[in-house]
Image (cartoon, rainbow, N blue to C red; front, side):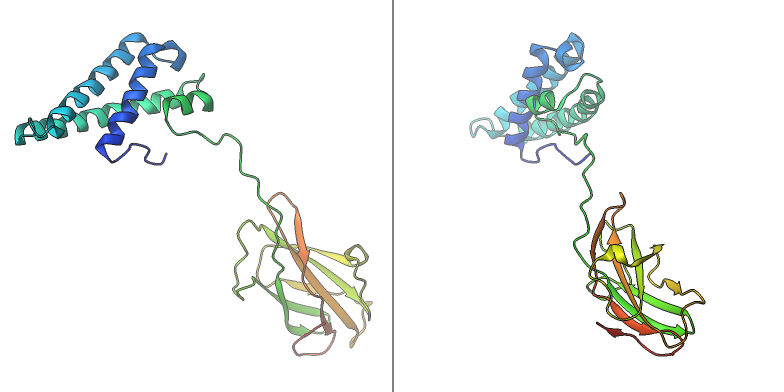
Length: 226
């Protein structure tokens, strides 16, 4: 839980005053018994009194400043476990949390968006029917973008690949930055082939496919982008 306790003493005074007032007014409504709420209010009021003496020019003495510091530490020490108890109460809701001024919990998982970035795809080596590939992010790093689980790979054999990806052959999923594709024996040496890829998020939703990359089976060398 992030640190929610105000660091400025004036803000701490106002925030804990609201917390104590709400708890004392309806202890069961926040999962507390009457004594626990009263005990916290007593600690809070002790700090309020010490703060008033330490900030009034007429009573601002080293002793009163020291007392204020001690009461502040005692208040913070009492606040943290109390808030944890409140947060863990089965009847606690975000509405009650807002009322008390304590951190609101995000009970709904943050949805992971569909990838918007296209992979940078390269054919790094060709050995007969085997294509060694390299998948990079837009910064040319061997690292998947945030929110990406893997890449889906597709191939097309022959000239003029269709712009419709459903007409391509799905070659599978890869979590590696250097996947490999093996064409079947029916693909003769020197055949024009195309490869494309797209990123996929952890829920299996794909992003846009990158520009198709052309190569030839049975020829060593680098690919050419379409």
